Length: 105
Image (cartoon, rainbow, N blue to C red):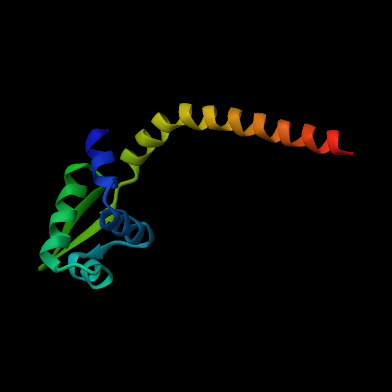
């Protein structure tokens, strides 16, 4: 999971994942949408591939990259405890706000 979190830490890699969420793409297509040179995009794709977040398949002379959502499910599962913690705190805040409104009436 550390490799996935490391990969997600970079905004350019998150942009690549967002683009691949919609449809597979070549490195060239991804490079057109990012404000970095193609070698930089290739390095980002390598990090994403090594983290298991993207897979690549060869079509003739082109490499097509697509999203692999399974590693994100592991992160989502890890975050669940933190979501529950924040939900409890937000529920308590909502209760206090409601009490304050009643007291002002």
